[in-house]
Structures are given as structure tokens and as C-alpha cells.
Image (cartoon, rainbow, N blue to C red; front, side):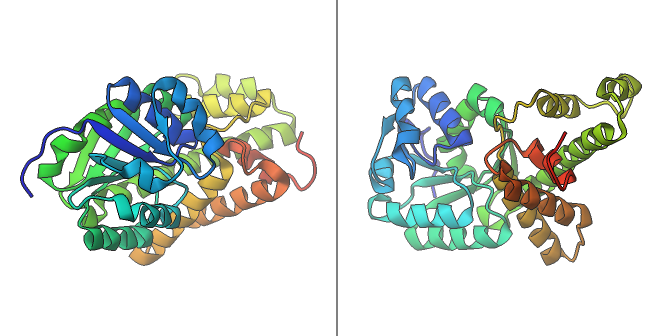
Length: 297
């Protein structure tokens, strides 16, 4: 393909915790934005920021320079793009930001080839607040000629874009995202378990924080997540049910590579128990509740 001009319009498919913030920042950057969400009422508030909310995926992608998918999983992304297919133009850039995993990415790449779309494997690192402030880290793999097209999109949603490959089919960005997520989820569980153990042993959490302060074991993320649990603020920046999905994708990727991931597997089970206890739509640090058979202190 020949080098193309920067995008002026973008379709956002999926306006959940991440997609809504991304759509707002795209509109604020001056791009024409159309957005679709399975539950339209969740997307309606975006109209106040200049986003045009549509009834169907096809209506959203019609005439768009870039299609951005940020949905629950790979299956949802593929289903939505199939619904959009009648209005997709050959050569359209498709920035696929859903954390889909390796197997699903193969299906998405096959669809892109079938419809002659230019697929960019572009998962993002960050949660609700970075999505709302346009400070996500974009991990991207795609051909060089399409990069100027998607630059305005990635610049609007992220503080930095790291190109890690020149084809989406290499899954270089997805593979890096799975490794990064494995670390984030394990730190989340470690924080949740340490808080739970402190509760169980009658240890004041401030004593723990004082002990690690300023040393190599101190961690700003740990402090933020533990504070959430202790003040009972579980408004999701990243939902437990989505974290469980990602944990299982990590385990599956490890199995494909011949790598045994005991912590990731145990973490997925912790998330499952927290979901079973009614915390699926809360922040993933609700892993804390998996430490107790009965009511958590």
C-alpha cells in the first residue's frame, strides 16, 4: 500500500470503561468521531462531547478513515466487525485495541484479509483514568505506510505509542500486552492478599507501608490499590470480570509457548471466586474478597 494522509474521522466500536474515555479524547482532538456500543444508553453521554452515537456498527464505520475496536474480547470484536462489514471500505485502517489473546487475533487477522482491511494490532496499557486523560500506552504492530493514518488516533488516546512490529499478524503487540498484563494482575493479587493477611493477623496496614517506604519493595500502584480496598472504594478502573478474562488469555498464551504460569492460573481462579461472590463489576482489586470464605472484614 502507498503512504496515506492522517485520519480525520474515526469509528469507535465499544464505549465501556476504556472506550468512552478514548472516544471523548478523539473528539476533543478535533477528529470526527462516531461511536457504537451494544447498550446504546451507555454511549449516549458521549454526545455532549461531540461524538455522534450510532445504532449499528455499520453506521459507525461508514466513511471512517480508522475503525477502533475496544470491546470485551476477541469474539466480541469479530462479531461486531462482521456486523459492520457492509459499510467497511477496502483499505480502511483497523486499529484493534481489544485485549484479544493470540488465538482470537488469528481470527481477526483472517477477517481483515478477507475484507481487505489494514489491521493494526494495537492493545493499550492503562485503565479508566489514563483512558479519560489520554495517557494510555499504545502498543502497536502494523505496516509502515498506515502509521501516518492512525497517528492522530493514537496521539489522542495515548501519551506514547510503541511500535513493536510491522505486521499485525506477528501479534508482537498482543504478546507484549499479555506479558505486561501478567505483571499488573500479579501485583494486584499480591496487594489484595497482603491486605487480607494484615486484616487476618490484626496488623495495621500503615505499619506495612511504613516498613517498605522508600525501598525497592515500595510501589505506587500497590499503595493506590490497597487504599481502594481499605476505604471500600471499588469503582472499577478495570473490572474483575475483564481481569479474569485477561488472566485466562495469559494462561492460554503460556500453554501455547510451553510456559507454565502457576501464578496467572491461580490469579484467574481468585478472580473467579471474587466474581462468584458478587464483585465482577467492581475493580479488580476485589481479588481481596477471594481470600475469605465468609464475609470479608
